[in-house]
Length: 139
Image (cartoon, rainbow, N blue to C red; front, side):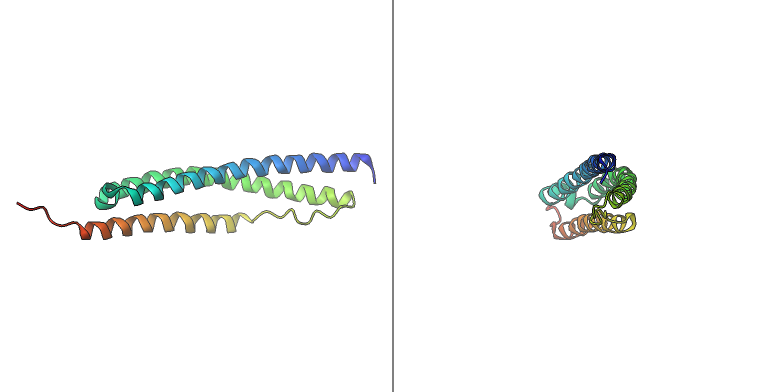
């Protein structure tokens, strides 16, 4: 096995790891903002009692999600390309690196949309439910 082949494989692995870390950070931002929206929605009577406030929270969340998903999608495409490079270079060096198989972009999209939809729907349902329970003011 050539030292050059191993060096090229190591470089490909380093690139993959770097991209994986960058992609993971984008997931971290998504998780943090999603958890913040959920916590704020559950803990704030105002957001879930007044429907326009709930809509404002959802709108802000969706704007964040659009930008975050575009970045995450681009990062995942790059991660897939680097995984192909690692597998190709690993095969050339005689090393089995078939386990480098990131999720396809379509699966990522489906999961992301499902999580965002669940949070938005839960926020609206909680606003509706709490709005029903509020007693009318006494005169």
